Image 1 (cartoon, rainbow, N blue to C red):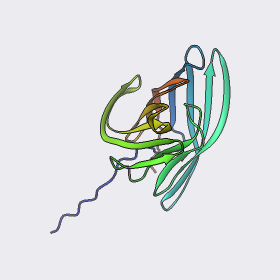
Image 2 (image 1 turned 45 degrees about the vertical axis):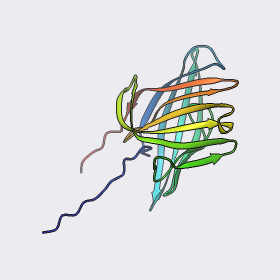
Image 3 (image 1 turned 90 degrees about the vertical axis):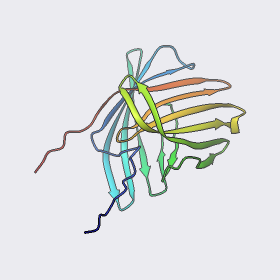
Length: 180
């Protein structure tokens, strides 16, 4: 009998209705810590395309602000319209292959590794995807971000000529699935 091996690539940005990710966000643009909560809702999928509406609640100094945005995942990329750091972007190409580069003018991004370990308040994650960003091609600063398999975006450090920011996952909750 022949053996069939199925290779499943890790999902570095799962779209799961009811998934909740909570981050601490610090920045040179404000004092203290901002808590950012993402709740994935209305996940829709068709063949290789998926979309989710994300409810983002930002809480700073006891004041909360709620925004909604979309995340789209295709066979070629993951794109967010917004996020904890405050803007949308192409998160990474699919498949995520070390060395793969893309430009979002004026920034250059590269998939640096699929084998990184990162420690955040939510835990230690292994075999993470790391993306390096070179702001203005490297002349304006840099950023690194990590995505954990089965969880998604877990950590980012951003440093430009004018500002700096750090986002770190503090907790996550997966929805309970009911067996029928």
